[in-house]
Length: 322
Image (cartoon, rainbow, N blue to C red; front, side):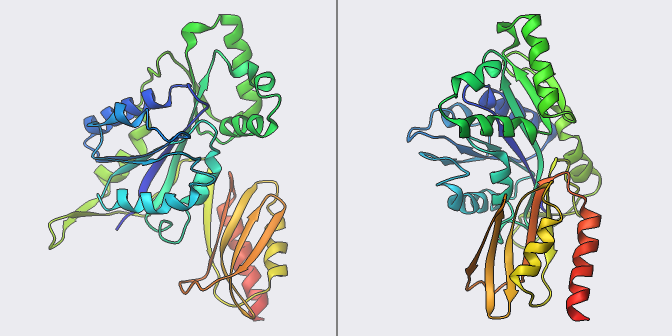
């Protein structure tokens, strides 16, 4: 069964994510694609989900917490519910204080890594307030870092509410965004009114030209296709761990990619058993695990050189066997 593409909608509170999601769901119908949605809100009350009722076959909601913090453990369970509907595409709308790279991390959990992949991160910008974020959040530097990261990792930037700003402010915003993210496309809009058809082009190429539908005995259609190519800056690379190694050697390998590596995790066999390894920035933790599946390591970073990493990884284990 093929992996399902996932679009992540990011951006601070009030930037227009739900309005854009409505447009994406409408276009999904126009394209003949079955779409499902995972929504996350900080409060205990769902305010945006009700707007979308009837526009998607299923909406999963994670309330009263951030999807990348205290709700992270529930992501896999929610995603599995959506995958049971055999969707062509999944949209994840993040709460305004969520970090997209944390969600990319969640998609590499053992029960998801072979079923989904990150297609694209779309970050919406509130043009009225973006230039003031540093002063608005002066007392919370972590929030400043989060809003900055939402810009840095985006594959597509949509600057919304342009009817509320002047041309001079638009130029300042453009300069700021290009400084923080020089490679992604920037679109200016009002009410999230953008042409979303191009976002579906990679999916259409795979689903309509390559996919062959085979009906199984339970009458559900399963999709078979060539391994999909991700079109996002946030790359996740899965590396098999074919034999036991040492924690020191693994950490030494990870340090080679520290400029581009955001995080790494996986189940690694050491001399005294299986361990869950988690690497975030400079922090590395090893936890004894009862995991019994295939051992692997996942590297998550910006524009990682996959061929070089895999080449060095193979050489790494060749040295162990020698």
